Length: 272
Length: 302
Image 1: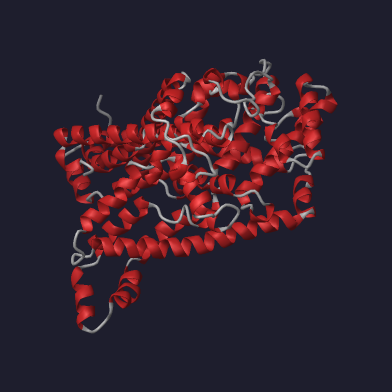
Image 2 (image 1 turned 90 degrees about the vertical axis):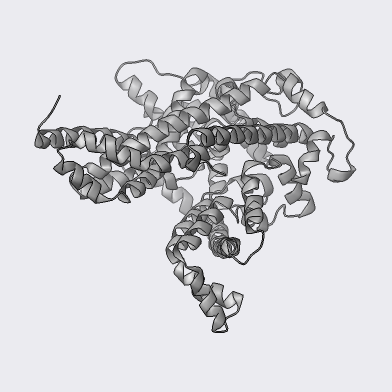
């Protein structure tokens, strides 16, 4: 943490953290004047927000549906299939994406050509990537979230369902009035944890799916990939550190604000 | 609209199965494609593209890997070594931290717990961390750089802490103490066996993190004998793309490809991986994106 001062220095490897000269806010100025500060911040927060909403809706509905469905083995099979991608690394996911979407022999283009449509150059079309990224995010994380929600639903007292049944509640009514309120605390905790990380992009995902494809940066560059490139490709230690510090401050501010809000609305759900 | 319970159940099952099945299919298709692709001849892929129907079965891809197994064996060895030792060590340290943090006789335990939690909210970021590990701990080019950074995850400590404090009554530790057990004895002989279920879950996550880790290798390791599996994959995929593009150039399907293939060849000849590394989509579409050689100007920084 003490390394934060790198953000205010012109770092050189030889002089080390303490020995490097101070440059004040020069690194931050560099970052903000690059014109990318707003872009990467917006991308990071927007992507995480959309991932959060989409994944949560899918996880919750899948958990409820899987819990109520009749049958046993096919249900378990479906659950395993959804969970499977969670165990795959982003490296392999990136290779899969490349094989799906690349222009020359990707599966999607092969399919498009075979039904007589013209192929799409995905790696040249930034506008398509928000959808692809949302798909891959859901692909990889929904299985895990579904299991978490399933565990939470399994913990609901079954007597409540029986009582509701006797009172004549329909299946939908039972879901809306018993299951959903019962998983609310779990959902709020999960959402709060996600919100606390909303300014941190999923580096593995963006790096492995996009790589250093500069054409797509406008739509896909997040703070983490930006900072990473500044560090490894450009060796701009000072600016990369400034970006990192900016991200940390942003995260901290967001989580503090959310916590205050949650405390006001629903005190028992606050994180701290 | 009120449906009869039986009808409602029927409709719910149909809609529910359809809804989950569609998503499950979307999850499964990429896997199937990769598996089928691995049995398809390379020239066929280049010519016809990937498909779910391989046509002729081909073991070329597997032969290619196992003809020269030294690299992949080494990669597996590194990964297994790091995963096994990292999981054991990580579990032990996490459990010990969690146990200490929930002991009621540990003064200021909440202060310490918040200190741990704070690191998840606010951190120095990539650069100070990188400098710390490379310059001050001197871990570059060592297996410790793969082992130590992912060792502790604060979320796991928090989960274990609440698991311990909710399932194990304090009285157990106290009675053991009265019987003359020391703190380590209590932890090893009583607490650890009781939290086994939580340890199994957390251990799975830690092991998965280690197994799928390529990030630390990319940052800290350049020597091939130290490459873990995932990083080895990255290298291989990059080289493979050069070969795929080579196949394309032979077919004359893509005009750009020829230039890249040339670049890739030069890279291989020079024995540098940099050129192979740069065969990424951006090379396919040349533009002002190659910033590696020029100093950043704000306009090029993106």
